[in-house]
Image (cartoon, rainbow, N blue to C red; front, side, top):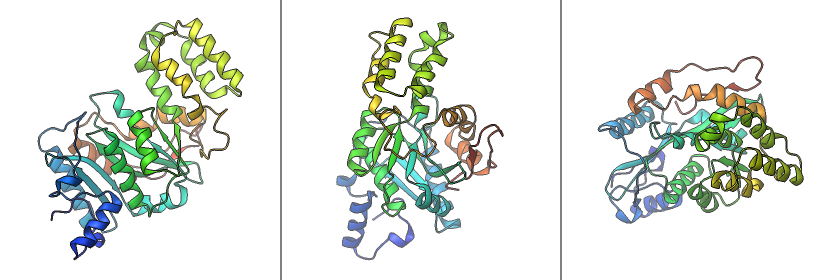
Length: 319
């Protein structure tokens, strides 16, 4: 049997033992088709890139036995989804993994490498990276595999709050793989996606961005939410816009009015969104091919935000 992504300590002499580990963790056996993903790929890699990534992850584990990685293959025996983390990231998660952001902003551009880090905030209000994934398939099954693999790496500790983009397959996967976790929509994702989804408003209405973000961040009651939404609908001719209407209908998953009992670290503040939007994404330039991206990723020095922002990069993670 060819085990994909299992740490050396998890390889057992008994096939029954090994199968139990794989069934419980979500790891896949390359040669057993009933474990394989029936993939409907939304992305693909250039020739040789998948093998480069696999070799890179193997080499990292040789260099550092505490390095953890997993790879999911599909029914055609293609390397499809990747996850990796290291000892420092695992330790950071054990301390600060109560609130996790799964960053899938790559989905807004078909030219970006599908790289998705899992991010948190430590006790110094510094950004930490708990792990990272590269996803060629965005089905519910792929996300379930990823989250179960994350739980294997993190000794089964589920986040109290998990922030993601608004995506049906993500929502289903979280309910299946992280049943004890409160799923919230990430305000940073909402603000990042808006100019791409309603460019006609952003491009022609200079006041919209400020009013929209004020509505997102400063509504303090259900009445504020409704009045602000109605104002934006009327003023900017957004009636019938499915994205904007869906945003309002899911307000219980992102509005401060409804998440008062949720632990969010600092991930719902205006400052967090501004810092993520202006500087954090510089760490992850996704338009490079995987071979160059990974080299850039592992050699990039720590990056601190400007002094006016309290958020800093504390850990590049997984390297």
